[in-house]
Image (cartoon, rainbow, N blue to C red; front, side, top):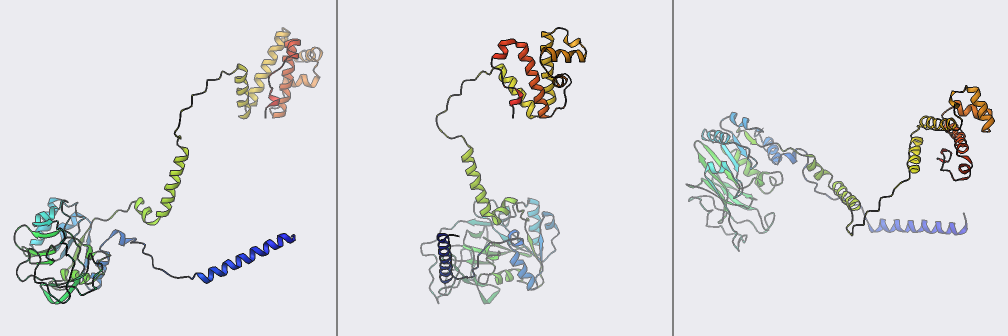
Length: 425
């Protein structure tokens, strides 16, 4: 290595060492929690955390995944119907209502206003949009509110103000509520905002909400009970652990004591390959889409003036013959080329020496040696042919060409001739 190369290598090593030292001083390794979203069973079942928590405290939980399973519900249990129950038929709705009349407890998630909800209509529950007041969300710590939710009867549980700084967000804070059957244990709940719920006729047994809306109502039907929420978000995987939402679910399920079975009706979520790619290979799909867009941009016809088509060129007959010969040569059809060339050469000899084809082989060889100047070996090669390898075909073709030149006379010998097979690659 020269001195200049050694100096350059040394400078590169020093620069790399300096850069590595600066990186180690300025940066440090740290762990960070990244939310990747739900996967597996939690992605398909939004109530998975609630079901596991209820099982842990001794409440049996079963999942119903077909309408036929609703016909065999045991009496005295609790049935949760999420808003994804749109597959329920009028007969299945009538079956559920009969089960409630015989002592069952039904917990229903009401659909948003403007969306058909036959079950809520059959229960006589109205869903109304409520515009928030300008001072909504303001609280005065330490003072109880005297107003009750709309439609609540006298003595209904009033909402208590949350402590200063409580709540998940300013838009949807945790608030303190008192259940009528557990007045000694107030619960801090994060109930979802949404439409106001009320009965078409009569008053609910209890209602949770504020002065503008009731987001959860309960009432009796027959010997059973119906609880309607404007959303199951407090009981889903992301909301069950907030504030006392889990305790509210326990109170709704175990209101009459321990031992009641919770039946959760849901249609299993069928994950498509596209949803799996969207949740597990987002960047790969985005990169593939960009590459596909770039490929389409590259292959599509660019905008601009249309050029006129070139005039059609007329080919010579000799060009077509040459192209045919090249095609057969490249497709390893040498026997075809050789047979046709030998037939053309023998035809030229027959025209120049009538009766040549009827002579014996020895007589024909002597004629070729005597009048055309062929050597005995060349005459034998012309008449008999030996091998179809490339050198043998070229050698025989040269002999055929000599015959054509001799048959054409002095003009053909002196004039230009087209390329022969010897010149082919």
